[in-house]
Image 1: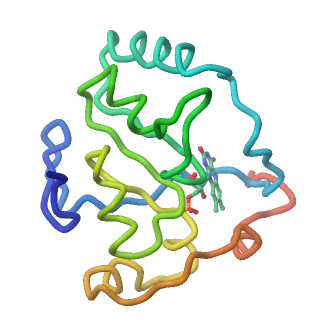
Image 2: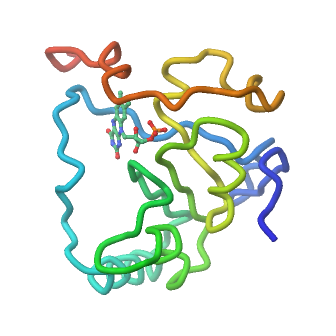
Length: 152
Ligand SMILES: Cc1cc2nc3c(=O)[nH]c(=O)nc-3n(C[C@H](O)[C@H](O)[C@H](O)COP(=O)(O)O)c2cc1C
């Protein structure tokens, strides 16, 4: 039974009020190829996660474009592949845009993250709390965030 999206979570002593967070958004350019990956197989991916988990890390955040998509050469999502080899707190993102998709993503993760929905809707958390129907934003909508040159 997945946890409720609006329930709290103790992340290594930091008490989170709910399980919805902001996905990584540090990239300055929208030129990104979702097909590019350092890993070709699930074994390579899971091997890296096992190496990281043996170190002193607090959580694993998986920055994907679609949390429902199968990972690598498998029928499982990247969250499922990751969960299979570690019990560390796990965060997932990609096409989480409303209450239902956020709750569904908690099936195999502890915290769910969104990028475009936070970027393009300042009321995102309140809207999710209310269970409003919310749009799935296109990548082109995020172009407002990109700058031609890095910040000094
Ligand atoms: C403006 C912007 C910058 C991003 N920068 C990064 C980044 O630096 N590192 C990263 O792993 N993902 C980055 N992403 C990808 C997001 O973390 C996320 O994987 C992706 O947008 C899918 O989530 P969404 O459907 O909620 O937008 C960026 C996304 C956006 C919109």
